[in-house]
Length: 350
Length: 262
Image (cartoon, rainbow over all chains, first blue to last red; front, side, top):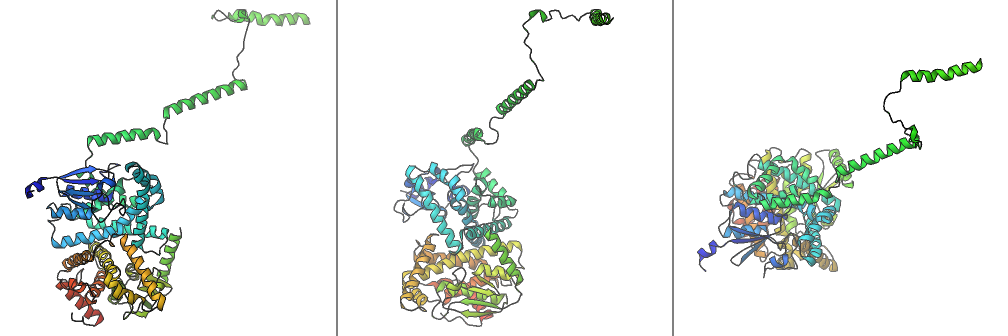
C-alpha cells in the first residue's frame, strides 16, 4: 500500500454514546473527540457501547483487565493501527501528522505537560468520585445508564468492577490511611482548588494557551463538560464550577462551536423531554385537578347548606297553590284581607 | 460531620502554635535503610525547611514510616501536631507566614502548582516503580535496605508486604503495566519539561526559591546521586545541563556538600 493511500483513509473513532446534550458521556471519549475536532483530522465517529467488539486485539490490556474508564473505549483505528485511551490517541494522531499542539513553543509544551498532570492529579479524582464512587449517583444515575447502554450480561458486572477500580485509584492518590469521608473531603477540596487555578490560568483567553485549542483544552473540556451537563445528585462541585464563569463559558463555547446538536438530536431531546413531562412530579394534571377541586368544594358547600337548613326544598302536592299568574297581587286586596280578621276580632270582643 | 470537626480542630491547633517553635523532622536512617522514593521525599522537605529558614532537628527512627499519621515519611512534629507529606507541611509553614510563594503573582502561582503536581505524579511514581517493581533493583537493593532494621522473619515479610502494597497502588493508575523503558521515558519527558521551564533562570519562578525548587531539587538530586545496578537514571538527568548545574548550585547553597563526581 502506498503512503498516499493510507493518508487518504479516514480514522475511525469508537466512543461511548452521548446523553444530556453531550456528544459522549465519558471523559476520555469526550477528550479524544475534542482533540480530533481541534486537529481537524478526518475522523469517522462511531458511537458504540459494546466493549467486547471495541477492545484492541492482541493488546496487553485484555478484556478481563480493563474497566469502563480505561481499556475499552475510546479506540482510534487507522490502517490496522489502533490506540486506546486519550493519551495514546493524542500520540497516534501526532505521529500521523494530525497533532493540535505543534504550534506551541517549547516552554508552552512544558506548561501543557505540567497542567495536564495537575488536572489528572487534582480534578480527575473528583470527576471519577462523582460518577463512579458516590453511592447515590452510582445507584441512581451511573448503574441505570450503563445498564441500558451495555449489552445484557456485561451491564450487570462491568459497572461494579469499575466502581471497585476507581475506589482503589482514589485510595492510591489520597493515601490508604484516610477514612471514606475524609477522602471525599480531600478530593473535593483539591478539585475546587484546581478549578480556581484553571480559572486563573484561563483568564480572559479564548483557550488556555491563546487563540488556538491544544490537547490540554481537550482534556479540561472532557472533564468539565459532564460536570456542567450531567444530572449529579451531589452538586458541590457543580456549584463551585458555576462560580468560575470563564470556565463555564469556555466549556459551553467548545460545545456550541465544535459539537452543535444535529436536528435529529434536537428532536430526540425534545421528544425525551415530552416523555418526561407527564412524569413530572409537581403538577401533572393541573386543569383536571382544579376542576375536581372546584366540584368537590361546591358540592360540600351545597350539601352543608342543605343539611343545616339554609336552603329548603318543599314538596308541594297541591297543584292549586302554585301561582300561575306572575302579575303582582293588588294592594287594595291585601288591605282588605288584613283588616278583615281585625274587625272580626274586634266585633267578637264587643 | 466529623470531618468538619476535625478540620476545625486542626485549624485551631495550628493557630495556637507559637511561631517560630521547635520543629522535629522524623525519617528513617539514610545510610542503610531508606529507599529511593522515601529519600527523595525527605530531601525535598528538608530543602524546603532550609529555604524557608525554619530551624528543625532531625530525628532518625527505624520505624518512622509506622509512626507517621499517613504511613509515609517524612513527617514533622510541631507542638501537639504531626504533619506528613510535602503538601501539608508546605501549607502549614505558609499559614505561619514563613511560606516561599507569597511574592508570586496569581498566574505564576498557578504555574507553580501545575509543576508541583507534575513532579509529584511523575517523578514520585517513577521512583516507586524503580525501587519496588524493577525486578533487579527490588531484589538486590530495595528489599534488603527496607528489611535491614528488623530481625529474621520480619526482614523478609515486611518488604514483601510493602512491595505488594506499592504494586497495587501503582496498578490502580496504570503504572504497574509499564515497562522499565517506558518509566525512563516518563522521567526524561518530565526532565525535558523542567529544563524548558528553568531555562537560564536562577530558580524556577525567578530570582527567589519557592517550594517547587525544593521539590525538584529533592527528586533530581536523588536521581543523580543514586547508582542502581541496572538503570541509567543519573544519566537521564545529567543529559540536561541546566538541571544538573541547578542541583549543584542548590546543594552548595543549602547543604555545603559537593556532588560526587559521576
